[in-house]
Image (tube, rainbow, N blue to C red; front, side):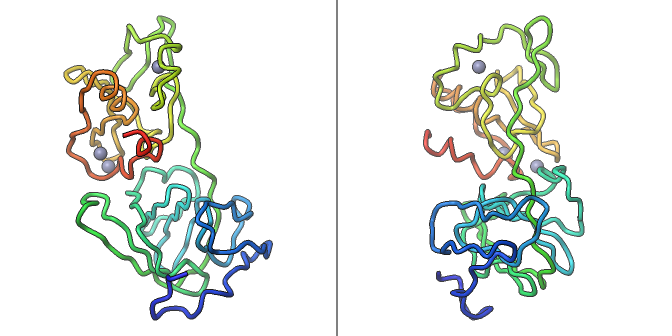
Length: 245
Ligand SMILES: [Zn+2]
Ligand SMILES: [Zn+2]
Ligand SMILES: [Zn+2]
């Protein structure tokens, strides 16, 4: 472990999870389920942990998504429902200098979601009061199909959509029949007639190309439809796309 630069003291004893005192090592690169049930609290997070966590400090709350490897600050909010999935921008974590631990401060580095290629930021929290496990992100839902077989989107209904068998072999799935997880997979879909693309509108009203529809446009038609004015809500790009693109 290298995340100990003048901080909270040595990390080598930080193995207990408060609840179950499991014995897993903190050096695994893979994502482990730390065994803490949803809604329960633990004393610390550590390298290799998976899951989504609500870290409450004296002044604010923070979501550490160790599956998606993102950090989201939720100033002042204290809702425990799944409703805050899109409320604030999830920033891709680049490194953790001090992992969250009750009664300590965390220090995390992340790429600025709006300027990910040239801005790296860090946040040191105030003293951590509690660390609570959140439900995993719900899986994406397929859009509704109406009686006429049209796909219901936020700005109307799409006719003439391909049958579900056509996209069955696509590595990028299909936003209609085989939705895959991505940051805006729960955001409403708007069909862009002018571009013949599906867009996801984030909670700030910005349209982002649906990554599955973008993959379809690129791999089937050689059309790059990904250029857009972005506020960061569609980032980080989904892991399944990185293997593909
Ligand atoms: Zn399909
Ligand atoms: Zn947004
Ligand atoms: Zn975007």
